Amino acid sequence: MNFSTLEFSIDHGIALITLNRPEAANTISVELAEELLQAAIRCESNPAVRAVVLTGKGRFFSGGGDVQSFANAGEGAGELLRRITAPLHAAVSRFARMDAPLVTAVNGTAAGAGFSLAIAGDVIVAAESAKFTMAYTKIAMSADGGGSFNLPRIVGMARAKELMLLNPVLSAAEAQQRGLVTIVAPDAEVLAKAKDIATSLASGPTRAFGEVKRLLADSHTNSLEEQLALESRSMAHLAERTEDAREGYTAFAQKRVPKYHGR
Image (cartoon, rainbow, N blue to C red; front, side, top):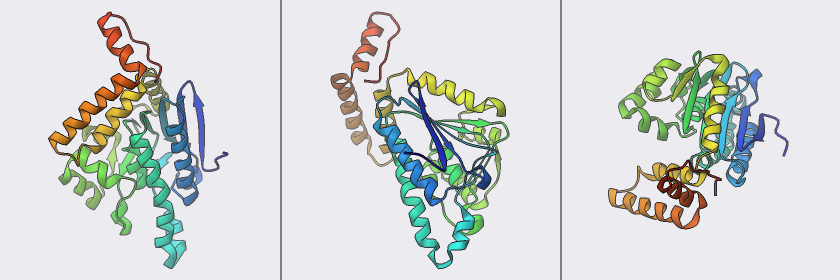
């Protein structure tokens, strides 16, 4: 499949997804949302993909939804938003639950759905000049892209309400202080840093990463006992069905460095 609103490549186990609407601040149109879902499906389905990097082309990571298209749609704006959010949310869900970790390389401003997409990463690397703002309520809209799910879990409910109702613009350093960013890197180095992290993750136990991601994703709805049961099943599943788990604990017992193959 050829993409027109994003770039997609796989190299040495790392998938690189680049939002490619720089003339429109990488805002999320119907086509971009649909292509992002297709890219997520590729990452989820291809066992050769062991880490994913998501970034934007140009000065913006993503300015969020294509607000001009909302205005142009008039009475059809609700239908348009459903056509955008359906594939966007399916993509976010796949990124959250696939085995391969997602590293977001926030190269510039992340606003609205761009903010939501940035913090959907398992590891978030931000350029020093990057800015973060939710911005939804500035245009009388509410959050999408998983923002209302991830944000309060990262910063707490009070901070989430501040960011979603008052819409402050956070610098990369401020976002890191609030736990929204893992690493801040110089602008010229942000993608290279994200790729370095992805390379390290790609050499790790991919299936175990996936189990951890899914355990964390479900932890908010489970009781302690339910979560304990899931943890037990997950560990047993890895031991019984993956080569990496056996390699991991065998290497530990033999006092050598494990060699993982993502199986």
